[in-house]
Length: 160
Image (cartoon, rainbow, N blue to C red; front, side, top):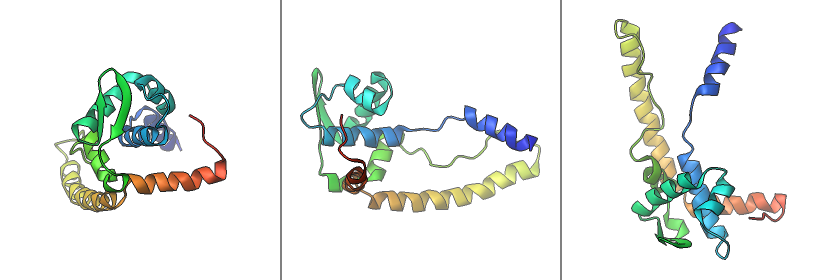
């Protein structure tokens, strides 16, 4: 019981990346709000983050060729069709080659279990990464927005 409580406290302090989720949110906001304000401030309000974070993610999306924008003009736009932008494209834009799963690099180097369990686990993490990337290649921004549309039908009109 004490170990479980400590684990929950550790989980409170762990930081998980939300870059992919936020980047998809930004792209969806651009598509779904074509006539509204697309400033980093208005997008940040929707994402519930700060404008600097939005600008950083949009810069990554721009470098990856997924959006275009002109400095000083808050009208970013997608550079590709929704059906050609994959979840993997977006992930690579904001996370680069960063793997989805990470080994614990703080195990005791004097312990055989600590060393070899990590090496063994890496083989499986690599398999998971490969399968996840294959699945991410098959999910497009169009698929995500189609699912969004299905969900909003049940909730009523969404306002920006």
